[in-house]
Image (cartoon, rainbow, N blue to C red; front, side, top):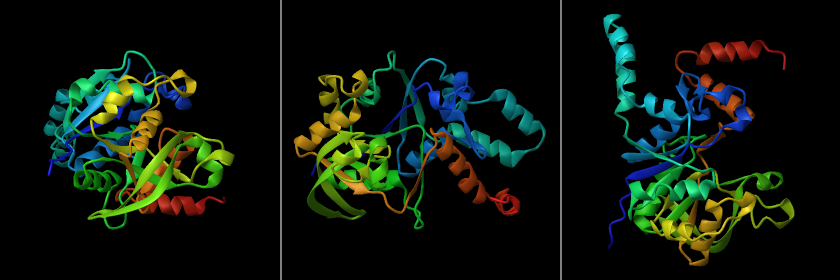
Length: 299
């Protein structure tokens, strides 16, 4: 059997973060904090826990703080050392050792599909994951992560597997939506279903299902061949969903339901606030105090 070990992940972070202006005028939205860590930390932590070793950032101008965050900070480390703040120092040092970080500049904003294709020089012919840089996924009650489930399924199946979540019918126009063939395959980490179509942000009346793509994917390198020759789609951009539709037409795309994991769209104002409140309630330092404060509000 062909070996399908997945060790690389692509994280597109070139977006301008217009939903958070003016805050993101000079700060990448991926560096906005969820309690005491930036959004991107949660994304990479999820990938690393799943066994990913190499992270490829697809970046744009003014995104250097993302690279700096995962680099050595000599002045800060020296200060913490002199102040004998050893626990905090170890936490800071551990960040730069999380994964191997590579950055590739997306010179034009031509869509998510174009961003993913930009990673080809670093990925080559290997399989890879894609995690959107403003989507936070919290593990299920049993500790399993979205990327952990997808990686396990991909490595067992050897074909592209993407995550889906069920959304209310009124919200399908916000997402890429899949249609399913009904073909089911049971794997060690859970069941997957065969996809026969992907539609980008359909109107409610024509949506093929309520299963949405929340920004967690695993692909074979075949997706690069598709993206290389793909025409522009919605908004004149190279859409990843169109490339996935081609994979589905070739009978090469599966989905796994990520029910049980919690997902926050931290690139959206309300999603960002929800993430801060809910993860803040679980934080060992401030959780109880925040809970007591919220009870004082007459909402």
